Image (cartoon, rainbow, N blue to C red; front, side, top):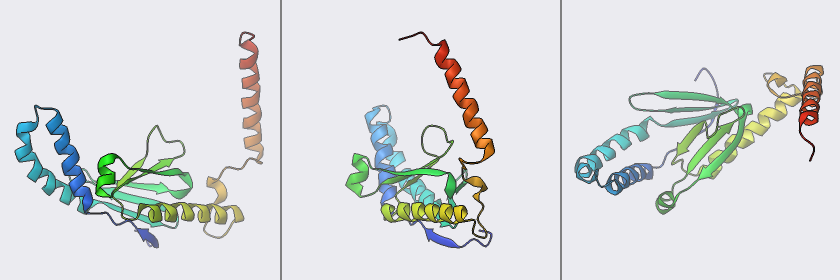
Length: 183
């Protein structure tokens, strides 16, 4: 990981394999057409979910959250901490019954939905809190201009460029408001 210090690594619960097998089997069962495929699917789901679970990796470093997953298609995402806007926890009824949840990582400028989903992280509250605490520490260090941290990634509302942009936006809004029919 290029000499980056790992602050925390996520550990994934083996209960995720059961969740994936049950959720996919329920989908086949309720489609009615898929019922005959259940005999083949259940052992395959257990085998594939074990391999997929082994491929999952989420690591928090000083400046990033790195996520790796996938069997055939390996996906690796590096999310800069200063870009993270929210980390949510989702827990449906089946997840609650199995005692697992999904962490969602949302970023600034991201499209609708989460950029990264981490299903089955053990002690998800602790992992989420560690990521958000490291993000705050990073922002604090950047705002103080400490060595190794760049404040250029953080918005500065007092810079001449941002003031000019805000003035231009205000003028555009005034023009739009003037063109709207009176209420």
